[in-house]
Image (cartoon, rainbow, N blue to C red):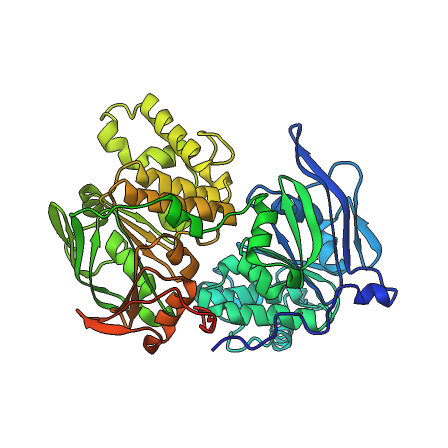
Length: 554
């Protein structure tokens, strides 16, 4: 069911603290930062009241990360500017070691946990209770402190003695939050969530949001850095938008915003996903890719036909098997069944990923860091790696063709910064994802499989990725998009197949919109159905105003 907690944090309304004569909880004034003569942040400022959830939004490269690093003391700002906490000046210069005692805590997107240590050791690192006589860590007192913090945050069923490596992702996020908030008096301080929701599985997001609202409801100020505009509108009380290193607007009540207005603030222009279908028209061809009896993990048996020049989406609830389908088709997970290409049929029980690649199957995994990119290599090396065997020589990989192909990707996807030689790890998440997609599109795949392609990217990168996905079909690929993001599916797909219990239960064909896709996912009776193949086919219209809004993580 949907999270019943109201969007606004309990008791907050802009200006209430000022009305009582209290200074803002956090005030940032005129912070600037210059690197190598280039100003990346110019006179930035924002104000956060106690009990407020304040969102900081902007494209990758807009200055969000720089601002957070100035507040946390990672970077030193240019001359001028100041940071105040409850009216007291704490910088610059900011002493990172003193921030927790002063009332500032940070939960970063990588969480910063040590997998081989226990929950207790991760939470208490740097603040262990010590035995006065032996000067050894007092394990009992540390465990009690962890349990007290867990109780305060409403965290249950996490054993302080368990190793972090054994915990599911949602529990790891809870541990990182507990570490940031231990010793915090209820209602005091500021907690900065720096893209933390990226590390939270979709099904665990409601609990994560409840924890944020709990903190704000007690009077703690929350600064939430986010790329997800829907998340901002659902959770935050006010927002500050950055663009090209400058604050565009600050302190805007989210009650006065919608996604279109927020997108315009972030990009400086409108970016309607609905334009993609109108601008990039596909023409399905006679040749098809046939999926027969594909099974593995939670996928019990998927049969489908995807024509070249067509984009077909697969979606479903958390337990539908959706997360298993992309890896099965891309050779990242062993399974069974066949993938019938126009000139070759592949047995998934026998073939390997290299066989699929050789046959023209390109897979864009959801985990771009672990499975899609070599982070220690350059943009050029990542971009051209799939074609070194075919375009290079046994004794020489070549130079000119690698530069030309990399430049094509940089130009086509507007990769920033525009450099072939920098490590791809130094790029933002959205630019990394664009390189990942671009390197496979240059190979003209017969079947392109994308697994959650817009995960953890900003609104600008999202639009570019979806546009190029559609163009891949125009170039002749059969395109499969596995995603729970109904807005993405509505923007690029000709048809959408809904999974239930590992099989195709329904088919939704155009015209459809995000609401009608949600109705097809959660309510089989909400759209007309007729039986086909292993399941049913539902043809959904454009929906109506009374179509219930639902989250896919409910």
